[in-house]
Length: 424
Ligand SMILES: *Cc1c(COP(=O)(O)O)cnc(C)c1O
Image (cartoon, rainbow, N blue to C red; front, side):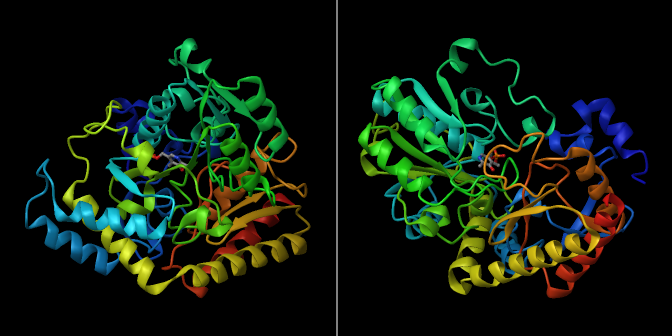
């Protein structure tokens, strides 16, 4: 199917992949190799088309090879690919980000979500002079040492939520709490009073599958972190410019102290950003003593793709349209599941959704009771056969793009009918 590509890749790249979930290990088949993408579709090396619900894991909210983004990148290329010096493009992207997030007064660009989070954690520690951080089980914040503890995404997918190679001394400084449990947070803040630098959270988690914050939960965290003088970090690498132009902070009307961004802001190129209150951001070098740097940070090609993407999102206000698509897909899946007598739950925020094989509500890290990995495996394989490319893990979000047409949504629902039929 892949012309032996996977075999070759496995010989020279660990697991054949440059990011673990791509290996399809959790879904019991071989990965497809992609040749190109256009709109809502990707095409494998054999020319087979798939409706893509991965969207490069979130960045491609406008779909593949969006003409305006491509044109902007092509013309940027002609001017040279990197300078390691200031460009006006960096100001433009920073202004777009600041226009979307009232909580961000200053922002710095980096090369990935991981870098954004790693830097934000260091900054919060430097600013407060404290070491401990609070995170939540099932939240994934990139492969940052301190945060690879009870983490979601690939770690959840492969059933080993803690990574080897993390110094115990460092892991000890990370306090892991259950999501959607404000009382646990209050308890930890009291117990470690004066020792906690930051509380980091995916306000709309997408890396244990989509899980929604219960009403009032995030507001309560905002209140508690203020009260205990702890830096509140919203990791909006997925939700930023996805849940709304201004991310989860716009949706819930909350302002974080620091915000981490990535994915969409690079338009498919490697870009991350972290920003927030001026007083905190001013602790960064060269103004302050918290060091952070990057040879390719603010890269003109990557930043151009980000600017082109954000400009379209800002001008067109596509979020209502994405909400309608998400709703249509979720309703279709639910009624199909009812018809096939398969119990499912769909967690959704706009264009971000996950189907769980349970009728129990999933409001924190999915347990054996709320996830059924065997069923997911079968479902995934049937969907792939029918030309629908889902994230190859129960613990990841499906990402709809503006490029998905009503006909695409119908095809996905039809395919899901077959997938669910195999399970019932
Ligand atoms: C993807 C993701 C990251 C890491 O971003 P990378 O660009 O993969 O390093 C961090 N936090 C969240 C919430 C993410 O979804």
